[in-house]
Length: 441
Image 1 (cartoon, rainbow, N blue to C red):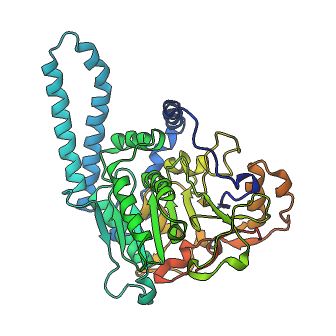
Image 2: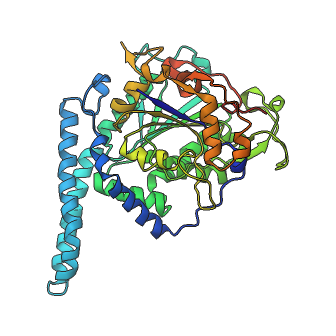
């Protein structure tokens, strides 16, 4: 099984933040709809393969009543939502001969039925948050240091209360930490996809994005916390990207330095990480106690960015990743005035599947007897780091810089490049400087 590693967007040509998107939102929607149709053959890969289900009780497709009920509700929603959308042209046509009251009754009946089915999936909307807690005796050992961390998760499309809790429980067990879920309630697969287009292309901030921004800002500004970890899946990548844009404009640099972001099957179009300052390595201190230097574009060395660690994990034939991170990551897009910034290293696995537990965590953070194994096929796979850095730089049009990268193969295991891997089983990575992946100051 082949794996691909793409370093974060860190070439000289990408040092200055890309300009804000200048394409028409309408044109972005048209392009995204076209992209969905072009890659439509991969849609079944969202749920394939159906086995193995190594997560056991956490598997989204495990044969049990809650999962079967959710699948049935999603199927019913898919049918009635597709029927409603297809009926709209006829409604406009018959509006000429039918009374407005009839159409109002039709729309109202659909809205009530759709809301009822979604309520069954999402459960009572008492709170915008759910929590995953590691089982008793499975919490991290270094409790003093863990008390200075806070972990958040934003789920993807078609995720109701049941699957969100399964995701949170699997994450809590994997990393031995309490994980707070910022609920992105499902509205059915079709309406979730429409919401993705609205969030991604029209830049609309839905209620869960606003709620997530509030709690993350509070955590980042808390003097008692040294790390704030945000894990995103699927549509959660779009929402997390919007939250980061907001935080970059509203939170101090020292507070944002606490944030670390890790995504799976990211559906976002862009992922910003503005420059903080240019620094030399001697200024980098533990616990973020280093001093920013004035911005000087003539200085040599890679820039320091506001968010110190961003990593993206993607299955190569995951439909959602194909229209998100694997479409817009630096190695896939030539640099241009309209190109989107998409920061963060990309860890790509040759596989299908989009489900967080069953298709991502089960293979990238394989567990045995409730403990993440110290090795697995994906994390032990080797990549040529020098070749990856050179390819990423050249893809951004910086041939001169690319020629400075050594051509001697430097084979390293995926797990040595993954910071998220260092958190498994309650472990704590060092407060290191931002990853430069082969570049030097």
